Length: 296
Image (cartoon, rainbow, N blue to C red):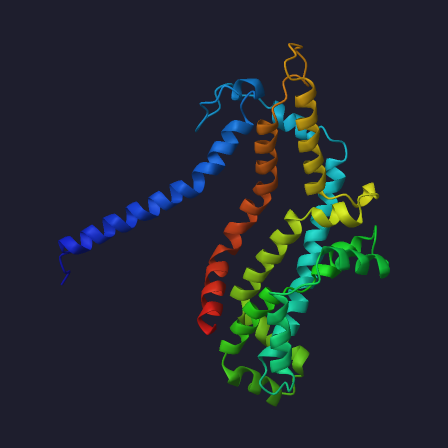
């Protein structure tokens, strides 16, 4: 027998749907607004009034961004950094988290305390720069990978997830003769895909969005320039050119520049790859964060 829904049930369903729709609108509106600005003719955008759709459709902003001859090589370096850094970061994080989750590890508490301490205390920018310089990582691709190979926050998330797994899983693997590496890579990781996907997304986004280490350590090596760093230079160039040509009536590409339009186009270019990848990891992302938080 189907129970007839009460007024309270209908009211809750309506408010829940309305609230989620409002939240979705608030989340999507800034991105749609930026997309409209990036597709609008720059000088027309200065007049304002652009909300949902471009008033004068133009690809000038994107053509200006991609006119940078170094951008595609920098994109290749950024992709290589993201792939290598994410893979090594997830592997190293998983190994450390697995060790810290094992109760038989005698240094478990001191190492846990050390990792938590690094969340609040760090050496600072200048000591970090001197360390990188002294160990010979300046103008080296590995300066993008090694200094941020392991994050204490990611270790805590993954350790908490591993601690919730049934102890019998590890014990049965050891009875069958598996060592710790075999247990981790053949048993633990395959059944921990939610937290693996979560940490993968965190590390991947961190590498993809990073540019400051390029500015500090590899700015003299054009072959190691990152996409984000090149886009930052494009934005600064547009600001400088716009300031020089302010008040000019010359009908050339420089006079048509609008830093706000270029900034919007850069935001779309940088965000789009993450938006493409995120839906494939979203279901694991939510589950991984939720289950890891329960332990904490």
